[in-house]
Length: 359
Image (cartoon, rainbow, N blue to C red):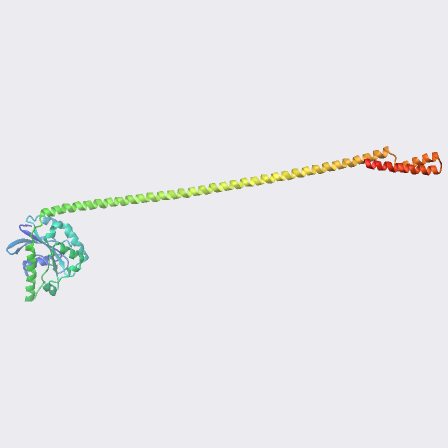
């Protein structure tokens, strides 16, 4: 593949159709066109495009909408010694898919910020009225509005394909002329040096992002490990706390039981002492009672013994009367006997009274 001139790159699924229109080829079509939304181009195809007498190498790329590696485009741009004048990004009018929205960011990253000065957005497959009036509602889509503003509002509408009437031909030629004017008005070239610098920057950023991702993953894993350790420590501390509380409760229970046992022993000891004291008191009372009974008995015996002794030592009243009567009879029989008996009676009674008083 030979590249001798400044390059005009076609990016997008329908870039081949636009390339054939720019070349003015209705019958002879250098680029393989497709009626579907899928790009037919598998490799970069090159042909010569002349605008105002200046030759450009018009290149149809595999398109980065195909979800394939961009190796083919990368290798081709490295061969563009004369630089890239314009990059035509072809999007379908009214049909900006989520894939194409995401691809806008991919394109800018792939070519770098230096390519901003070379982009032209071309809307294809617009209905005839919109092609004629150049009315595309691109400003309603945030990412597309931002992109077109960033590239200096360089956008246009692709011609109708196919066309059948003269008025449509004139409209198509007008739209093609606008595209060519935009190409020629681009002042700076996008060079292979800028592309390589961007690729190195992208590799650096990719490596940095991978390292950052790895660092975040390591931090996340470390955090998970730290959290796991912290959770284990918290569980261990909680278990220790529970064990301490159980040990404390166990000791409290043992202390309570020991105090209860001591109180029970003390109660039993006090009960035993009280029993012993009661028994001692009863024993003393019994001894006292017995002692008193013994003393009373001794007194009774002593009294009986004394009584017997008095009876033995002192004559009784009858004896005194008989003694008095005998004495009176000796003195004078008859009256003397009576008087003697009375005197003896008096003496006996007196002695009895004195004896009782003395006792």
